[in-house]
Image (tube, rainbow, N blue to C red):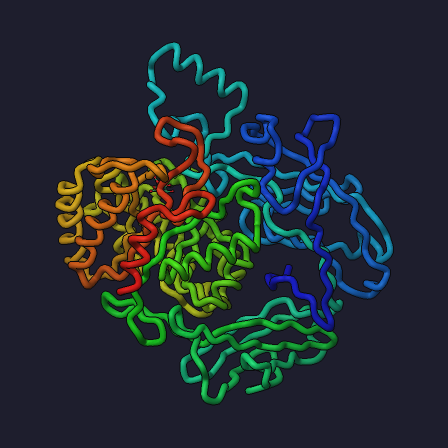
Amino acid sequence: MSTLYPQNNASRMTIDLGGVWDFRFQGDESWQPIAVPASYNDQSTDPRFRNRAGITEYRRKITLPAAWKGMRVCLRFDAAAHNARILLNGKEIGFHRGGFLPFEVELNGLMRPGETAELTVETDNRINHDTLPIGTEGETAFFGSDNPGIPAVEAGKRMQQERGINRPAFDFFNYTGIQRPVRLVATPRKYIRDITLVPSLNGAVRFSVETAGTDAPAHVEILDAEGISVARCDGWEGILQIPEPRLWEPWPGTPYLYTARVTYGDDLYEQPFGIREVKVEGTRFLINGKPFRFHGPCKHEDSPFHGRGTDPCLNVTDINLYHWLNANCFRTSHYPYAEEMYQLCDREGIVIVDETPAVGMWASEQYGWNLADYHLQVLKDMIARDKNHPCVVMWSLGNEPDTDSQPEKAYEYWHPLYEAAHRLDPQDRPVTVVGCQNRYDRDKVICSMDVVLINRYYGWYNLSGDLEAAKYAFRTELEWWETQHKPVILSEYGADTIAGLHGAVAEMFTEEYQVAFYEAMSECLDERDFVIGEMPWNFADFATCQGPMRVGGNRKGLFTRDRRPKMAAHWFRERWKNL
Ligand code: GCB
């Protein structure tokens, strides 16, 4: 398995399998068209596309070019949600657990160049206590109350169980299917499997190259942004020295990128990277030795038609809206995003907090669910995939787990993951896990992280509509954090807002309230030096599960789902211009 993103160059070839495939729910007779990559859920008016829990089948023919003779050939899925079984001419050739990270299936020995075969991909959208993200296994609905104990409601719930329910334990629509690109990839048989780069500010770049085969050492050459060779060396590992190094700086600085051009036998891979250092010192977060303040809304991969499907046009539009907002960062709430987004952020200087799909762990029983090994594997795969991106400055182990009802148990679960992230990351970035609104004074996990990330909804879910009380409460909490001597980021805060709903008096759901809410919270944030970041929830309105607290999705966006700014977007644009 190679973790390298597929590349077309003088020695590697890819064929993009995007297009219209055949699709059906397992058990159906007939096939229908479906677009890949995209979530399948919004592509039909058949309610099963939105509601059905189970396996779906995708099918198409693939042909290996005759010219690929003598090469290593594999299928590369950038992701398939949540579990995927891959079949060639009806025979299983691969299985992958988890819906947000890439995997490969080798085709050598299964198909010869020049041959055509039928590829079937079964994706499973079911979520439960063994998946990340988590699904509730028949417990209380995420939104609203299920009135436990009322006989008629209990009867209704039993009926739901029998029909098979698939309830997310998280607040976003459970989009699934082949949501990211699929490619046929050909490399030389003896190929470059992985490249790791650890640059330092003085221009020294520690590198290691993993190859399949070891007959001749790899050759590494560094090219500057103009393509001029500035350093070179032979070997599988070593240190290269770039003279007069130019740094990768977050926006509005220059995100300067170099390329490591690695050759090994007949193979070639060009890995972009940036020179930048990330460090936590006292209550400061330093990028290249300079204090960095995070300001930018959290995101989702979410848009009309595509659902969670990769869409380069949407990515570019969104990042340009980040520039328009004067924002400099986002968190990949609540799962690792498609690789193209990190490439874009490397290039555009937008900083990323990279999050695992460990979301929905808000029940303390989670610590008895046996998830730790799988969670560790996902963390490992995420770091392996994203380790060379200069835009990634911090790892988030997950979102809003229960950390205060059994503080010791929670610590036993999260601390090994924290240590693993440090051990696994060659660049040793800071590590965090995002805390929910809880008994912070009992919590042992959140304050043990390198940076404290807290989601707070004073003035929305609690003290609703009363911003004076919300400010008082938030200040009370911030006073407590001051005693912990840690850098703190407000990693979520927001108010549902229906675009176009106005009020002369700022009341909940109006655009005026959203602005007043952010004014109030900002007033508290600005008083504290140890608060090093603000990440409003959310960049744009997004689809989520049905429930009495959601009107056509989660409406906490600064933008509507079709990316029109609400008043609050204009407000942040002004605020961040001056930060
Ligand atoms: C949270 C969650 C996020 C939700 C948000 C909300 O704390 O982390 O996934 O969407 O609150 O709007 O309720």
